[in-house]
Image (tube, rainbow, N blue to C red; front, side, top):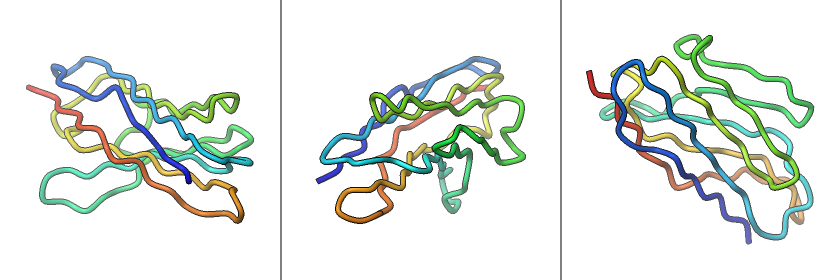
Length: 118
């Protein structure tokens, strides 16, 4: 069984920074893509950032230049460094991974709240 556990959310003032972490555990053979999504109140969940197993990254236009995604393959962890935070970044942030166990499956974390005050 695979579990994704996120940490690092909280309350921060506009212009501040936060770093989110998401660690995968269980009978993991390998992890390909790792992603972050976010869901603001009353809105649909939206793609935020992704990183491939080779380290290639992609970002939503709304966070490009402010957020940085990275990964540590040794401990099956993905990070999201968020800088120059804005009130519109307020959302629940979810990690998402494609993990090979018996077969390749997609897994979600439970979410961590990020609140940016103006």
